[in-house]
Image 1 (spheres, rainbow, N blue to C red):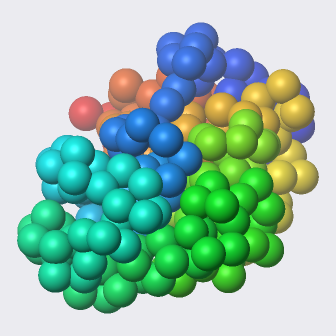
Image 2: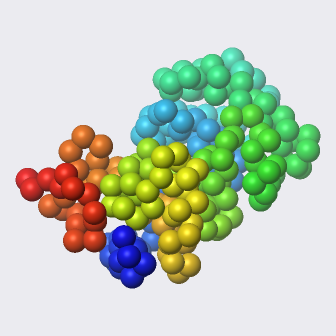
Length: 211
């Protein structure tokens, strides 16, 4: 995809959705972090359903520690891998309380030292909580980047690096959300809805659908 086409790609997505936001529900940087950790291999809808009661009971690291693993599991047992995620959330809550004054750090290295937080989760937190122009490459973004020819790569990290090279600066903050929404609702895995796609003429995908 040509550089000018990349700019036009994001211009159109911005026109359709000027203020893109995460579908996860949260009220603070801490609850955002917990929601993102819980969202691994789970739907945002399922996470939001569980965290509605969880965050009412524990909205800070210290409250989460007071809730304990068993109390936490009672709220999140409908989410896949809940045992592992519960251990991670209690672990990261302890580190935040002990080492960061119960605040989520605005630092990639510090974030990635937290249990259950990898590069993708750190990118989401840096983007949503701290307004950094990062791109957390999930399955949706990976698919869109490769299908369109915008930033092809064999691994999520390779795609991320390629995206960061081609995304115009003025679209850097929203690009992460626009690409996820494009992959989730238009450029779907099994059957992309190409007729409804606002950037179909810019896309290099050879398997475009007609109906």
